[in-house]
Length: 172
Image 1 (cartoon, rainbow, N blue to C red):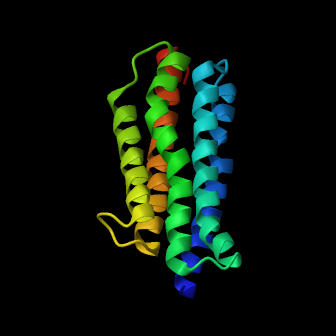
Image 2 (cartoon, rainbow, N blue to C red):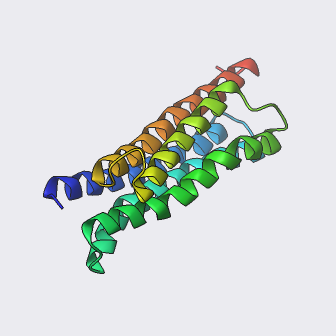
Image 3 (cartoon, rainbow, N blue to C red):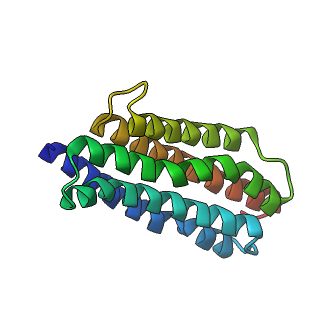
């Protein structure tokens, strides 16, 4: 495998771990704005931490598999299959978990985010079995990058929601 691929994956892992630390600021922001930490706040914070760590672990997994002397294509396929499972589980369950935590309908933007992440889980699944795409580093890294980008976008949506709720309650 090329050194560029490894560099990209290690950079992605580093960005994901940075995102995990940064995303925990949402709950700190909520507390500094005078709000109580709700079940939804906890779910949102946990969600970004989970997604960040899934991407970080996924970025490291192909290198780990090659240390066990898996053939290159087998490493990409196995890494794709193992990473697809938590990504798919997240995408399928998050809208319902969010509704339970908030007691309100899941907003359309959240459904769109979940569908995008589901699409990346399906890309990982296709890479695992070699259907639709040729198995390899391209689809794998694209899917992981996509999950991180959607997570970042969703984080911005969550922060904007926190700020709107604060202002609606009369905050500055």
